[in-house]
Image 1 (cartoon, rainbow, N blue to C red):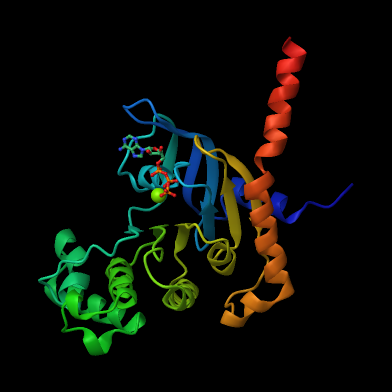
Image 2 (spheres, rainbow, N blue to C red):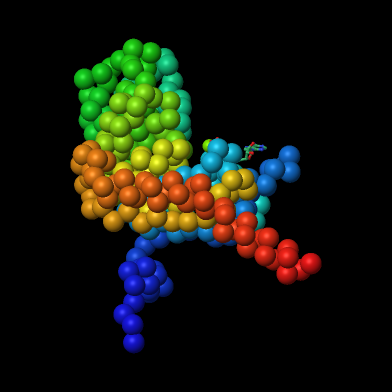
Length: 276
Ligand SMILES: Nc1ncnc2c1ncn2[C@@H]1O[C@H](COP(=O)(O)OP(=O)(O)OP(=O)(O)O)[C@@H](O)[C@H]1O
Ligand SMILES: [Mg+2]
């Protein structure tokens, strides 16, 4: 008898109920009223405390998938089930209120949920400290750099203590140096808070640096065409990006993105030939 693989052991733990699922997406299809089929039959499971990245070509339905996962958009077919209502969504744009201070912006989610003033203030101060912005807590967003504004957005989400974080290309609008630093920050926050994260990005290096698994989607309609496990232990130092193991993993993701469609096309061609 052969011994079970790691993924089989994990599946058994899930079946036995000893491992908590944060998000389960099953056979998800998203079709808009315009007729555009954005996403086709995507299934994935995100465990509590797991960081999963999703990469795929522009327009393949990544944001649509996150919107369904957050409950902001209805599935056309299939489902997305969350085990928690403590969900944080980080958008590409920080979307801060310009007339409010950093503190005021971070307190907003607590205000909307009706959290008591003292508790709201304490949570906001803690979240602002975690992203390293305590010294500018009284300033307005217009006085901050792009990277600092993104940190405020992260702090606003962290203040609601999410168990599930959905991040849609949160660092796409900032320069490369800031992007690398924000990635380091996000990893530190993940290691400290252990939320489950589904992270959409166009950057393969960002995906490999942050995630324990990278999922690759096809061109629209997005289908899951592959998965690359990232066995690098957390916490990962910024220098891990210069190791041969890291380069090998990014190459695997890159190859899936460029070649992933080929086996599918070959299969379809063979099916057409057989039918003819
Ligand atoms: N509200 C909408 N109504 C109609 N079509 C939409 C709507 N939102 C998105 N789409 C279409 O669905 C497809 C997938 O869009 P989506 O934003 O999910 O892609 P994406 O993978 O996030 O792309 P990108 O990487 O560029 O952000 C696109 O063709 C887009 O034009
Ligand atoms: Mg998008």
